[in-house]
Amino acid sequence: MKIYLVGGAVRDRLLGLEVKERDWVVVGSCEGEMLERGYLRADATFPVFLHPSSGEEYALARRETKTGPGYKGFRVDAAADVTLEEDLRRRDLTINAIAEDDQGRLVDPFDGCGDLRAGRLHHITPAFSEDPVRLLRAARFEATLGRWGFFIAQATHALLKEMAASGELETLMPQRLWREMRLALLADQPWRFFEVLDQCNALRPLLPALVEPLQQLPGRSLGDERAPLAALKRAAVLSADPAVRFAAVMFDAWRTHPGCLDRLPVEREPHDLLALGARLEDALRAPLEGDAGRVLAVLEQSRALQRPERLQALLQLLSAVRPEGARRAVALYSRALEAAAAVTARSLSGGGLRGAALGAELRRLRAAAVARVIGA
Image 1 (cartoon, one colour):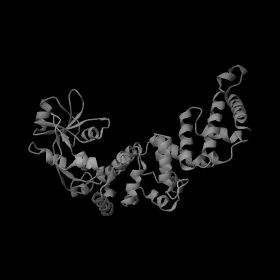
Image 2 (cartoon, rainbow, N blue to C red; image 1 turned 135 degrees about the horizontal axis):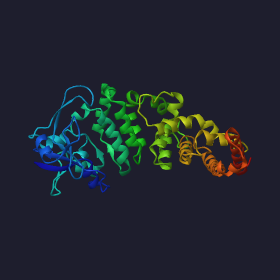
Image 3 (cartoon, rainbow, N blue to C red; image 1 turned 30 degrees about the vertical axis):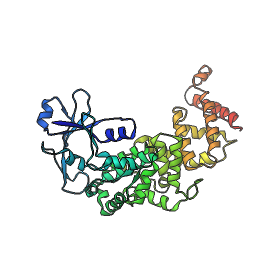
């Protein structure tokens, strides 16, 4: 029984990045031995176990054989005679197929270290194309590592185009697409994820609503760059929140096709932010000085008085997708929110007002406070 550190932990250490989690592969063992040693079964389908002390994942070395379409169409063999090289061979990219033994020695049968030095994202074998999730992972790694100059190798890009044309992407579960997309949105250069999907013709089967905006809409304030990607670049500078970034890249698609997200299991926060931004866009962009009622209405509809961070996210979205004049709107709404929030129901508690009367007076005073700070 031999144990090796594998995957992202080895890759990130070699790149000088923080290692966030460690995965291990066990060679020459079996399920019975793992359980006898106190490891806990972590997955009902795959031979993955949790260490009894650290809780880290230890997977038996395995080989995989394609038996059907999609990422679930594999037969897994985790017998004790599976070698480390066989296990590494089934992985997606060479940079993820480097192992390290307990003495710190690297096992690198596919020259992942060479590709790390070259900044190259290269598939291991043509079997890469058997799992459609790997296309998403390649795109995500370009988003994650793009700031260090990593790029998808020409041969791998050709393979991605073949995968997109094969129909395999249509077998992807929406949950898996959203998971990879969300991880990409957290990356330093999230727009690269969508660029890769576009370049290998994967957008139409995966995110068809983005095809038209990417083809037809000119970028705003960034020359000829396409609007959704330009908006996402601005959003990435303004906010690390994946909800803001997601809303920025999907904004034009949403306005044209409001049902475009019905397939994706998007969490409530990014979904609501996108819908709210589309609904309030005109109100946010219109001249606001002198119209305290409309400014207060935006604060109320966005529930900014209860959740000030919601308005901040909304203004970041506006700045990303409609940068013209956004700075003025951000400053104005920030002042308006501060003024309105200073008027509370508690401050009116001595006036004898109750119910609807209290609500009406509260709104009147807030509108007056907003009018004072916006020049109405």
